[in-house]
Length: 240
Image 1 (cartoon, rainbow, N blue to C red):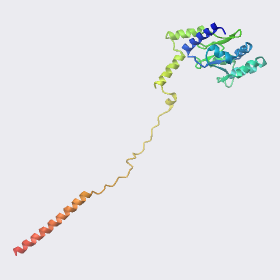
Image 2 (spheres, rainbow, N blue to C red):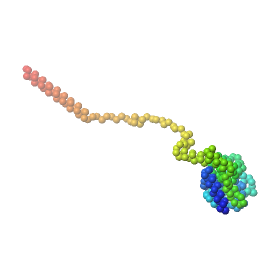
Image 3 (cartoon, rainbow, N blue to C red):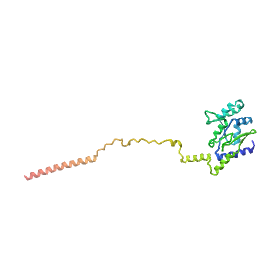
Image 4 (cartoon, rainbow, N blue to C red):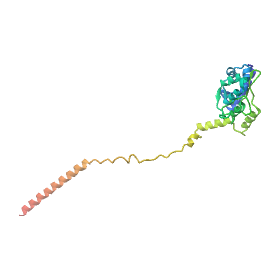
C-alpha cells in the first residue's frame, strides 16, 4: 500500500469527519459489484480496510443486495458469500425488494444520519469507496459535497451534523423535552378527605386541680353556714 494513497485517505476522512460527523467504527455498505471486485482483486476486506482507513470498520449490506446476488446466479456466487458474512442492516424494502444500488441510495437519504460509506455517490456528504487495479480507494469529496459545505460555511444552510449537535445540546440543557413526555398528559389526582379530619376527637381529661378547688369551696360554704347557725342560736338564747 503506497503512503501517498493513505495520506489522501486520511485527508478525505478528516473532511468528512469535520463536516459530516463521520466517526469510527466506519460502516461500509457493500453492494454486489464491490464484493465481486474485491474477489477478483484478492482483497481481504476485513483485514485491509481497517489498515487503509486507519480505524475500526464494520462491513454491512442489505437484504436487497443479498436478494439481487441470489437472482444473478453462479456468476456472482463468490460475491454472495462475501456479502453474506457482512452485517445485514434493515432497509425500508421489506415486502418488495429493489436493486442493490437503489437500496443503498435509500440508506443514505436525509443527510446520511448513520454515516455510511457506500460504493456509489449521488448524495452529498457520503464517502465513496471503489476498487481500481486491485487497490481500494477512498474518493475525494464530490463537487456536490464541496458545494454543500461552502453553503454551510457561508451561513446559507445548517448541516445535518450541526442540527444533531444542536438538538443534543438542547436535550442536555433540558430545553427540549422528550417527544414521549410531550404525549403524556398529566392526570389529575383524585383528592380524598384530609386524613387528619378522619381521626376521632380525643376526650378531654378531667382537670384534677379544678375539681379539688371546687371541693374546698363547698367545704368552706358548709362551715360558714354552720357557724352562722350557731351564732344565731346563741343570740336567740341571750335575748330570752
